[in-house]
Image (cartoon, rainbow, N blue to C red; front, side, top):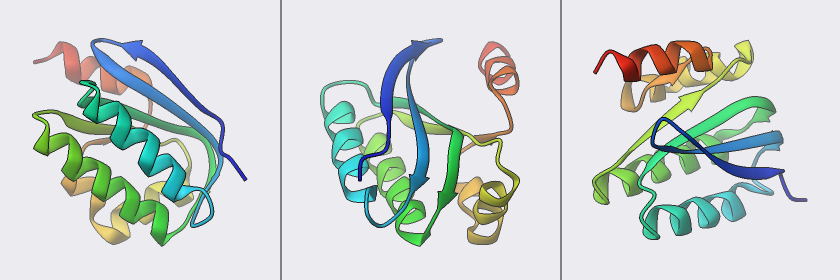
Length: 115
């Protein structure tokens, strides 16, 4: 099963929008696509999970691996998460301290404009 995956631009970031479930079945393919994106020069990523309904531990590990890859290429990972259960997973695992996680795009844009 493939998760819908689209790439657009937002404030100089490569905005990747995922939808559906982000789990052990599709996390390896998502990781591969994100690594390719970073390797091609788009090291500043914004991953929009607003349309994602479920994440598992493999998906969370994938996000951390992508975060590390962006740092190695001089970039960063930012995440937008509107799902309360998924947000809770970021808090429980501490991932929200590894990279910024925003409740919405407005908050993200405000943080970028403040820099």
